[in-house]
Image 1 (tube, rainbow, N blue to C red):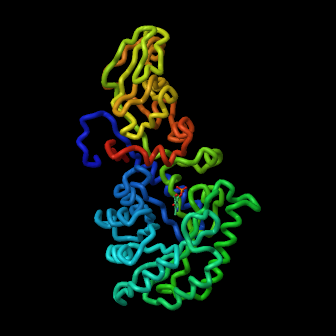
Image 2: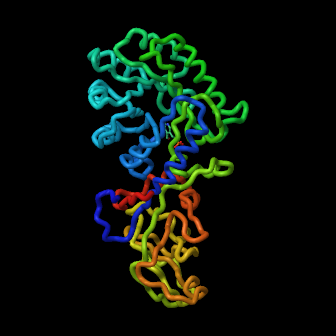
Amino acid sequence: VNSGLIRLRPTFAQISLANLRHNIEILRALSAAPFFCPMVKANAYGHGDIEVTRVLRDCGVTHVGVALIEEGIRLRQSGDRQGILVFAPFDLARAKVLVEHDLTLVASDFAQLEALSELAPKPSRRPLLHLKFNTGMNRRGFRFTDAKKVREWIDQNPAFDFEGIATHLFQGEDAGRPHQETERQLTRLAEIAGAFDGVKLPANRPLRIHALNSAGLSNLPGHTVGARPGIAVYGAASRSAIEGRPDLKPVMSLKTAIVEFQRAQTGEGVSYGATWKVQRDSLLGILPIGYADGYNRLLSNRSSVLVQGRRAPVVGRVCMDYVMIDLTDIVSEKKQSLSVAEEVVLIGSQGDETILAEELADLVGTVSYEILTGISSRVPREYIG
Ligand SMILES: Cc1ncc(COP(=O)(O)O)c(C=O)c1O
């Protein structure tokens, strides 16, 4: 399966649906909560939201979460008919769009509730509604102290199917340790839930209370608060959470092939600004991938790639469309020639070697989230397994 682009360039992101299924099983088994809502925002963290959501549904996942209304509509237009929580702010016009596409609203301030009061939905089409509370991150959400006031609005607006309350952890890495931020946030969430005791719920379903992101879920196995894992679904993690993380498998590999060779002489420079000086006569491989594909320019002279199961350093500046690698050691030690079309792995495994998205993230001072979501639309996604 290809994402629609004709592949004339040998650069692609390979998405392992088998690893995706594996991760979902692991994560679902970690949670003791009835509510499990993997996040597929930002094109499923770069993995392809429509394809990923299809697999999640096959795995029995009833709810997924997105950040933008546009992302929710895209999933609906792909034929998805199950729960989609949209964590975007809205006004009256946007609320109408959400309802029209049967997307679950997540309200996070009183202006949004006012817009919903004006919406006055038809009794035949009851919009699903969750409420998001700010329990410490200070991004979006009702202040946790406003729970009673929000409850009053819910009681006065029975035209909505009120389903759940949510918060977002800002330091899930400390979950499971006493007197830390996550514990404080979950205590506040429990207090908020208390304010909704006895609230009218659709079809006598229990109130869905959700908070655990990947780090929170990994650190609180068996917890009964609902989970919204994102990065872990894709088999990545923040560096601090890698140790002791569940047995997750990276879903995305980034691959290309050598398209040309250069024999550079001692003393010459490589790429813009000649930031890499050739120390010995060298064999360079030219890779058809660059920062326009999401291979960060800050990786210049820092990262390596895999060729024949060995690491080859990136030399010189990463260009918009090309990267140069030094193959001299691989060719001399293996006493073999490489040919055009030789497979190169930029993220993923080859032989016994692996380059994780976390490794590239560390090199440029960011998180694996930004590496994965940064793989641009110019890179076709190929789905296997
Ligand atoms: C509201 C919300 N829930 C859950 C997540 C998932 O977080 P993570 O990818 O760290 O698991 C995110 C992503 O940042 C989010 O914005």
